[in-house]
Amino acid sequence: MDAEQQRAIASRGGQAAHQKGTAHEFNSEEARRAGQKGGEAVSRDRAHMSAIGRKGGESRQSANRLNKQQAASGGNEQ
Image 1 (cartoon, one colour):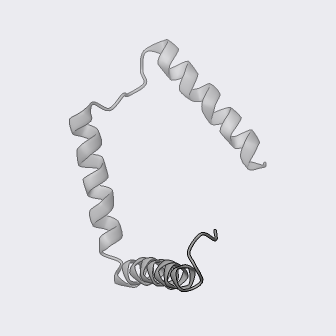
Image 2 (cartoon, one colour):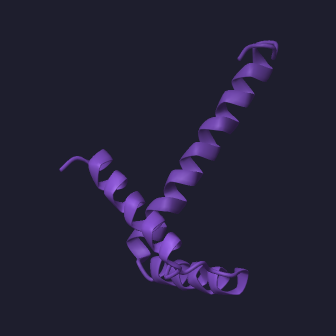
């Protein structure tokens, strides 16, 4: 089964739950706690967090390098 079929089936299930009145909708406090819990779980994976930081640093470094090159060449290139 491809991803599109799975999404369609899941969507129909969600719609049925809402019509039946059994679907759960998060309030803002529940959503905040769920997001915090997920963030804590991800943060425990040190290798993953290291990779994220490295990727951000590389992106920032290349952007700074590009800005310096543009400034040196006159500036109005993009």
